Image (cartoon, rainbow, N blue to C red; front, side, top):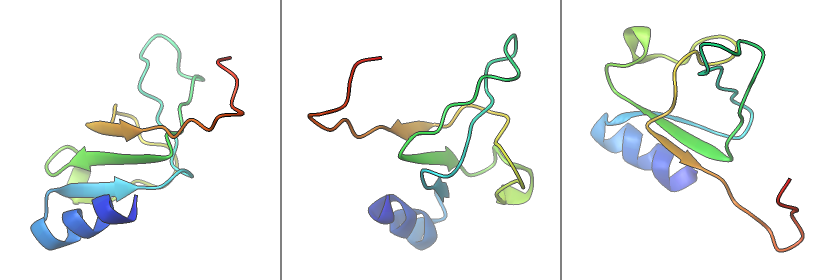
Length: 74
């Protein structure tokens, strides 16, 4: 996540988010939230290219999920 953030800051590619950010990007299911371990929304997709307060209402351009050996599929 830190590398994604550094790249975004250096290049202006977009806004990087950590695991605390939720995405409500399922139009038919407004209560369904996904929280990837790291994510990126490219420049121009967020109003003012600034993180919103609360959950993000669009799907990220990149979502990273780290799966540990003890994580269960469910």
